[in-house]
Image 1 (cartoon, rainbow, N blue to C red):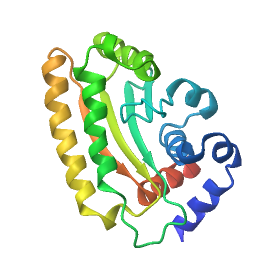
Image 2 (image 1 turned 120 degrees about the vertical axis):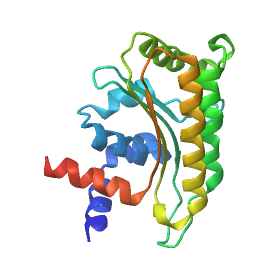
Image 3 (image 1 turned 180 degrees about the vertical axis):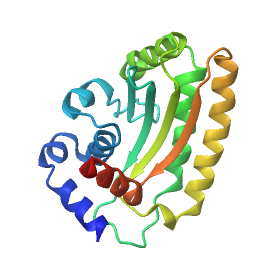
Image 4 (image 1 turned 45 degrees about the vertical axis):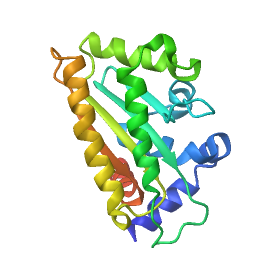
Length: 193
C-alpha cells in the first residue's frame, strides 16, 4: 500500500522525469532524504552523468549538513516485482570511488573534475562527516543479494581508503542500495514531517 503511494507521488513529478529521464528517481530520492527545496538547482550542480562520468551519475556535496552523496542510477523500463537490480552497477561505484578519492584531479574528466575538487576541499576543511554511496534503482532491494554484498564490500574498502587519505578527519562511509523500499521510506518520512 505505502509503496503504491510513493510510486504515485513520484509519477506526479513530471518536471523531474521530463528533464532528467533515468536520473529522475535518483534526484527524487535525494530530495526526499535531505529535504531539498530546489532539486532543479541541485541537479544542475550535482549531476555528472554522461559519456565520461567514471561511474559517477551524481556527486552531491552539502557542507551545511556535513554530507556528500556519490550515486549511480539504474532504471528498468516496466519493472516487475521479481526483477533483479543489476549487480554490475553496484560494482561501478568502486570505480567512482577510485576516481573521487584515489586519482589525481588533474587527470579527472572535465565532467566530474569540479565536483571531485569541491568534495575533496570540503573534506580537507572538515566540513564532511558522512559520505554516502548510493546505488539507486526502481526495483526491490531484497531481490538480489549480490548487490548487498557489493555494497558491503564497497563500504569497507572506501572507508579504509578515506581513513588513509584523511587520517585526521572522522568520516563515516555508508554504501546503500536505494531501491523502492528505501525511497518509499524517504517518501513516508518526508510526507510525515
